[in-house]
Image (cartoon, rainbow, N blue to C red; front, side):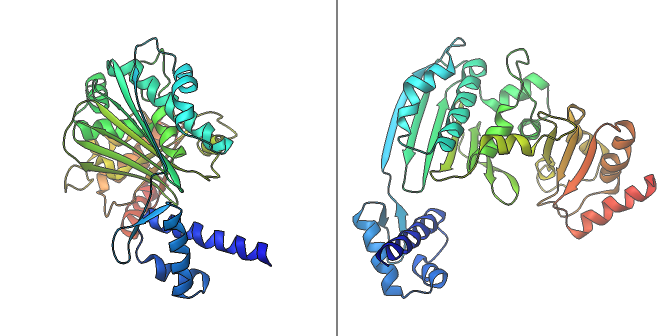
Length: 342
C-alpha cells in the first residue's frame, strides 16, 4: 500500500512539474481535475516541490521551474575542429546524468550544430550554455559569425530571408555539399521538443508534437546565429524513429520532406500565383515524397493549386505530392485541380 501511495504521489508531482513548465494555467485546478484529489492535497505536493527547490512560487497561484544546474563555456572554433571530440571533452558532462536515448539525441544535436558553426559561420568561438530543470534540459549555442539566413540567402541567390527559411526547412540544403549533405537542421529540429534559430532579428522555431510546426517571429537584431534546443529529461524519443519517419521501404534514407506552405506567405498576401507555387516546390525533385503542410493557410488560389497538384506531378511523376492539414476551402481547391488531371 505504501509503495502504491508513494508512486501515486510521484505521478501527481510529475504532472505538476510538467504543467508548470507549460505555464498552462491554474496548476491546482488542473491537478484536482486530473487525479480527483482535493486542493489541499495538491498544495501539499506543491509545498514538497518548493521545499525540494524544484519549483518556486512567483505569485499567488503561479509557479516556475527552478534551474537545478547551469553551465557555460566559450569554445574555440576552427574549420578543423572535430565536433565529436568537443562533445566528449567539453559538453557531455555539462548535461549531467540522463537516459541513453536522451544523451544520443543531445550528442546528435550538439555535433550537428557545432559542425555547422565550424564549417559555415566564420566565427572564432561559440558560447555554449546548458540549463537543466526537473523536467527538461535546454542548450544554447551562439556564434558571432555570418548569420545562417544571410548565408543561405547569398549562397542560393534568394529573394529574402523568408525565402531562405523556406528552403532551410525543406532539408537537403547546404552551402558546402562536399562536406555536408544538408540533413542536420531538418532532423535536429524534429528530435527535440523545441528547437529555434535566431539570426538577423528573425526567430525560427520548431515544436514537436501532434503536428510539425514552424513559426517565424521578429526579434531584436543581434550578431551571428543563436540556436536553442530543449528536450524532456525522460523523453521516449529515439533517433532511429525520426529517421524512419522520413524514409520509406521503396526509398530508404532521407526520401520524404515536409514543406510548410505558410512559410511562403509574405505579410498578409495570399498564396495565389504560379511563381509562389514554384518557389514552394524548388528542390522537391530531390525527394521521393513531399508533404505540403497547409496548417495556418486559410485559402489558396487556383493557379497556385494547379501548379502544385497538376502541373508539377505531370512533369515530375517520380515525386509524390501529398497535402496534409488542409481546411475545407483549401482541400476543395486542390480536389478541383486534380479533377482536371483525371
